[in-house]
Length: 559
Image: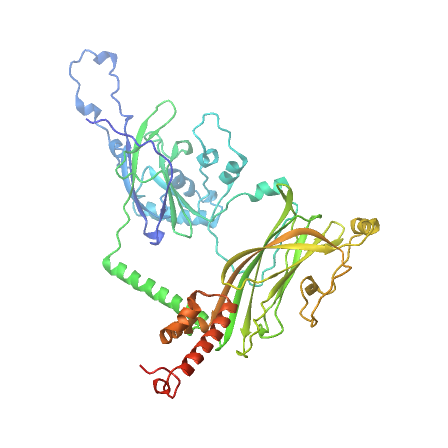
């Protein structure tokens, strides 16, 4: 007889299934290896007998009709959340006084029906479903390492005490938050209590009553064969894993009679029929089609184009950080100034913003405040006068850095400005800032104790103000001090019909392509407009220099 190869890997396995978990079926086979039906010693008066009648060792039927050898081996197929009663539960719920909850009364009715129909089909194998009041004590002492002297951490103990059950999702409409979203000064106990993952799960335990013959129904003989956990995402956790091609698992009981049991767990879920798979495929196809139509209705079927001669500018930006400033608790006020000529923005568009107050963090020799504050805007450029030789102005991003202390005293830490990139793509800009200062120690003492400082009435004065119409801008007498820097990350997109028309221009006039030097590669609006002007002049000169018989009335060349 070949020696049994035991499976010692009792860790959990994780599966993901799109099939409803109600179709899950497990076959559990339990068998006793060391039997309690040993040969008994013969009485002393019969030791002289040479032969022993083997019929005396034949197991006798019990009152319930089960023979002892039938009690040593059992195989049963169990479905998901299928309730199989143990002998302890049968004895308990037959007494109506032991029923306390509606579930207890429901179990009592089911047990009475089973007794009237001939008894339960299982003997040793039973289950605890998600509704039962059962806790696996082994989960409270899970070991994270193989060390013999391992001390469970606080998080392990907390996770072991979490009773995770699936709950119905309730809408958030009309609900009022009963607690603050942000806890500014969390205590150590608060951090510990909230550092626990509580994912709703449905749990099921497959158990075995390994008590001696005729002594079933005692809690001390109950052993966990398998634990199943399923979440709403279709993730199935099985501990231990399905037996498959591995050897059976073993259980050694404790007590005076140490017995050895082996059991296997196999997945015997029925395979989907071709008709069911086809029906499910059609359902998913219809579902995805409806979802695609819904997304298309939100986006629209027609691609939105700009008017001829216009350029649309999209900017998805982020205020990344600020560093090198004197005081802590910084925040940034920023806005985008569009040139007064040729530029416009939608009426609903917001071109300014204020970040949250951020505490600085030491990074090397500097103190850095990480904002990660996103913003977005769009603007339109319409160049109506194509004969103008003046290059268009580009939007400017202004920023003002301020600090706010515990006493609500704010101070201006610096002003800065930068022209938005003229080329599409991702750009990281570092803006150097400065602030105006006064002479003498009084101003600095006032800034330190009282707060406040010199401020600019017009932030556009950081650069050349848009309202300035003169030829020379004098800042004589303005004393400033260099402060820190602000980092912006900008993702710029440009949309214009001119980018599509460039290919037709290259086909119609080869000299235009040479002049533009790869028109489609030029993303700057300055280069695009300048290339258009040069192309028109080149084409006009070409028409004037060619004989009239080679030029059609429409102005195109005749091949």
